[in-house]
Image (tube, rainbow, N blue to C red):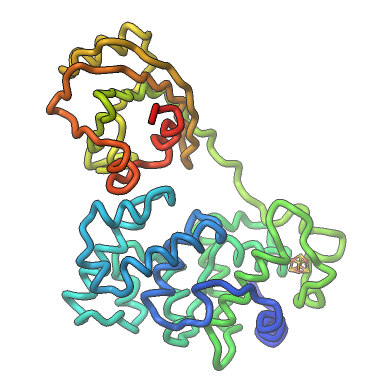
Length: 346
Ligand code: SF4
């Protein structure tokens, strides 16, 4: 892939005049840039704005993040999903405290060596915070570059992603490398958009774009079909004693590892089987109060959940029993289980 030499000259003035005002813009503080980039993975900008500001208020620097109790950290992350991002943030913060005296390392190899930081995030941090000419190739950049060059390779493949990164290297300006990366991403987010009609009429790259003629952008980028998501039936137990509900931690590996949940099992149960299971857990069920159904979509699977709200005479010590206030303020439940919040009686 060969990108036009004039890329930076065309993009930078447009970016300066049109960029969105976002809470993580106008800072070169690596902690803030790093946090925003991790939060923005798989998550919409509007959602991240709220979480980002709340997170920084609670944990204003790397030391505070490194020392934060895990339950508090996960509570701050509750609702964002992909909780391994939060755990990796903290692992990396601890590493920075131990190995780099609390200062974010400015060398690209050291940044790449931090937990949870891949090529894209390292490129974003190193260019924005340290002014280094390192590409940050996300989905937006892949789309813009494929359309610019009318490239019909599947850009989600690792080798093609690398080809885009290599093609960007000679295009960096002498200064403002961070703005250059952000300008490409911003163009992809605002003008050369996915799943709709790109705004070629106001695009600063229209004069050098090979996909504008004949509307080739309709077929580019080329992506391999995604695998169908696996469907799973999940039984969720809303075991209730007075105004407390049973919670437990999920296993340490696998989906939603180590997070709190309403006790759940894979499979479809009859009402009697659900009551029998509650009895087997030592909760002495007295009545099945309600059955509700919810769905939750993960990247590679979808959960079809049936919730059994069961009143219990005994608070079995195999569970932790939380009141409403604790459910709201202390325990972080993944969004899949929060879908039952509105069904429980308060
Ligand atoms: S001219 Fe159109 S297709 Fe080409 S980069 Fe700009 S918005 Fe995308």
